Image: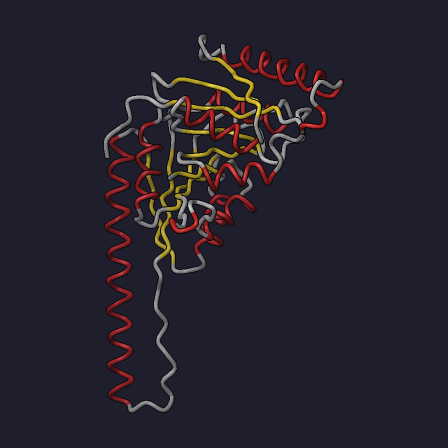
Length: 293
């Protein structure tokens, strides 16, 4: 897995507490050398309110948020610019991401700022589901990233998640836990089946489960090699329990700073769905979640 040369990072903000947490996290994150920062503020006003006092107030609020975010971002990216876009929040964020060819969108979760609740949970979820790039969803400020848990299932998106983490600048002592769930097959009920048939079925199920565990370990070994080469200390776990439950349990037990999961969107509905693990992680993770596609 080749390391990326650089990343273009877009911060979506409305000045809310959650959005400010996203800004803080972005500025302290482990982006590779050469990464560039951009920002966007959505300004949405219904037609009935045009040329009204409300419009003027929203204009001032959006511009103030853009200016304060630009000042904050300039500490890391002196030439960073934050644009105000007149559109529905999800559309504004995705439109700006396309314009600046963002590799990552960073946003807060359930923000309630002055620009018409720009980053409510539904907007954050809408961006995650429709974004063509990775999305980092932040509930609280992340001031350092030393321990990362990656949900790895060998899929294209999971491999891209590993590639993205491998592209970062690992901190001293930085650790990654790779976790995969081996989908173990249960032996079917066979009370009325002859003994020789029961033995054959049990042997076949055992063989399939052994192959699945071996395949999972091989996939983890390849991912671990890439992360180790990038400077991370890596541990791997193969579980046979419920994937989301085991994933969140390890986030807590390892005191992880960040959870990384691959999006498993359904092509027929054009990214409107996430895989159950990614969706569950967004809803229940106690730490920021990096959704990678």
